[in-house]
Image (cartoon, rainbow, N blue to C red; front, side, top):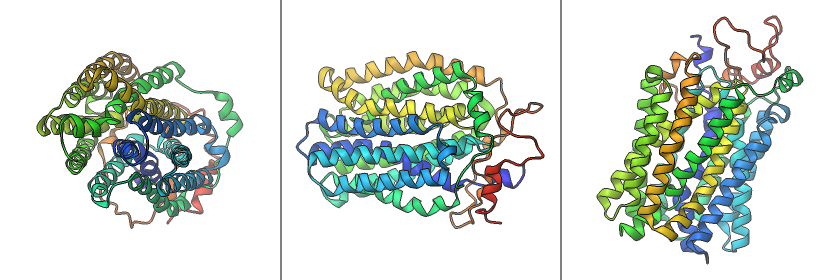
Length: 433
């Protein structure tokens, strides 16, 4: 593989981290809204759902507009909205202003995620890039969980952390291309490839994320009210769990394509269902920690394979964005669903219901993975590079490059070889040599 194809797309990884941080911090965000503002647990869950629903709406609205607007411009708009929305929500105690800020910030997060997902899908190895993004967001979220309990009470700290992350990522957007316009009309007319597989994957991942985040949204309350743990202890458990998730993702990268996609997605989802039952039934530190750590170890592994599967369905990244937005819709409904189920049936019964749903949807998800496995899975997904430090010059030439078509095939999205794509040429001027 050429040096160019192995360049780490750090601007996209950073955008991915900024966009995904809000869902990762959902338990502490919702828990602190409940404790710091005149909101009930269900109302706080509804605010979390509104934030994530706004993020999903951004993905659906912008999935086909990244090339038209331009990755750099759209990324900066998203980050600006995230800073404005989350920052204003963190600084006020007026409930309507907090809700408005959360919704604006959520749209900004979704916009950043849309740009990142489109660019990652265009990489020669999207699984590797999405895995790096999951590693970064897990590490950052773990650090926030360890830090926030020591900064005092109030709803502002986790929201401020998301806003500051978006602000820190802004300088990296200078390495994104200004505009990607080559063959736009011809590509738009081509339509979405693998439509049936993409729709099935989007529908099942919506339900998959709903189940995951129904528990994640109330995990803090399970630890504090049912297992009788302090906020500091619960935060430490979450930080450890996210840390083991890092190990799990690295392990998945090392395993790479050896098991294909079907086994990690199908078997991993079944194991997650068992972890949800264990976490939801916890009445002590040992059970709670075991369930949360095992669950958070498996969750990013399965998610990394699902994101890679979605990216493989369309090299332009449209299915990656649409499937990711469907996942965000499930994530958005999670806090409210978890609050309603736990209030009506209790935490243990909620866990059983969610686990049963996961087992059911694991079947069509695995079927899509089996079908797509007949196409070439890049051998290079086994390479998760940790050698390139953040100070290394950012090479833009590898970003927003359409993935190579299968050997012997012709990509319908590329012009003739004698006419280099405009987005690659436009990137040359911003690339480090």
